Image (cartoon, rainbow, N blue to C red; front, side, top):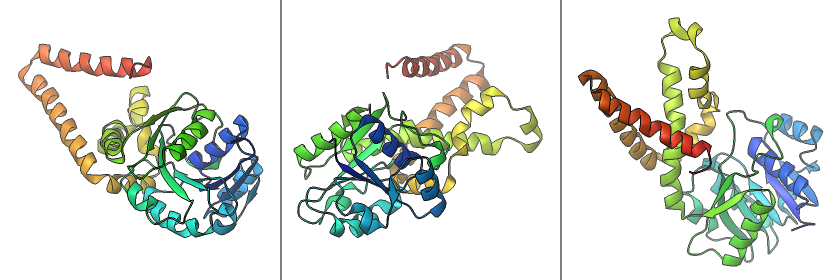
Length: 281
């Protein structure tokens, strides 16, 4: 990997952090960036996230690894646009939060050009290259979603790339990935947004740490989350149904004065949360 040329298509939080992490790990000799936003490219250049900016065609020409860091509803179209300009041996991947598009993205690529889906379980409610960090992926899990068509050697190459950035790599099918993150990522965003949105305006001057901690995700970019939720609609609806059932149990416990059930549910939530914090999850 040392000496490779890395192309970043979308130099925001995740794309910019991949670039910084790759540079810090010494796995990229040159980082070329492309973005729709001139301001994002300027920040990326000023911060040393990328060595130079380029058009899509220029960015991928000669690249060894191309990281696509755009909203999930744009990934397939972007793969189709850049693949003809990639040389044989180029590995295309993404950082998107859903993976239902993977089989479409990997189909019909030029000979020697490959695509493997990727999703780093890291991020922030902040966006843009101003918030990119070289340590964003250190110790964090990255899910790769190969399919039956994926070349094991290419998957191993991508796993080595993410491992070099300090990540813990796990593989899942695209379907299993989307079912899991509906519960662990997409549902929490909806819950945070719903909680923030339902508080009466006259009480907002009384919010404190608990409200801020619980609703932090609601500050994320709505346009980005719109594409994620629409792409993973069925799995998110299933997770929402499960959450509503849990809320109903809490409501029943309160209505009936069932302190034992209420305590059981509170203990259950505490155990799951505490296990995640100590790394047991």
